[in-house]
Length: 180
Image 1 (cartoon, rainbow, N blue to C red):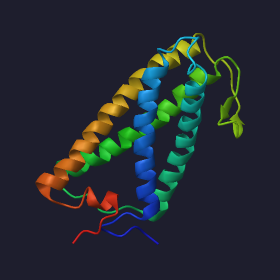
Image 2: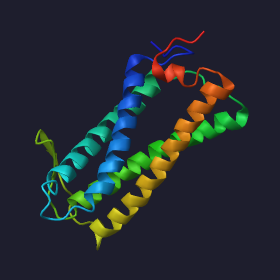
Image 3: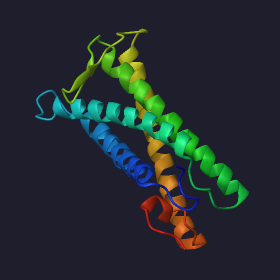
Image 4: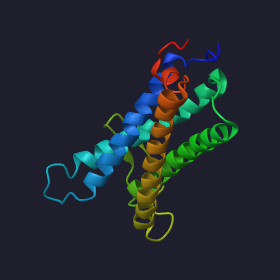
């Protein structure tokens, strides 16, 4: 069963919006938590939640890509340059997310400790694979996150442009609204 040519299925829609909320939430939490001091009541729980949500998002993203591969997706509408731009932007967002998952893992496991995901299960650590791993991966993670959030903003603006200016179904098909 494939996605309808003008509509995504509810699993694709749910994965899209859960990803959007998680990416924005992780970005905000990440900016906030780096300024927490040792005596803050949030010093331990926020990084724990950040890592847990990040790893669950990694698993959800793998599932999302598999789902998309087997279910397909509706046709992208627009001029040739818009279609090419949309494909490049989507690829870049996935590349940035996987790079963030890897850099986050490298930050969190540099000391050899596994990552507890909401205390449900642990992801084993590989330890420090290179000198200053946590610092280097942290710097990379920060700039990847800024790049992803910038691309997310452009993605949202493009969807709104298609809805209000082009008056096509680019936005409504991801909202689950039937398009005429």
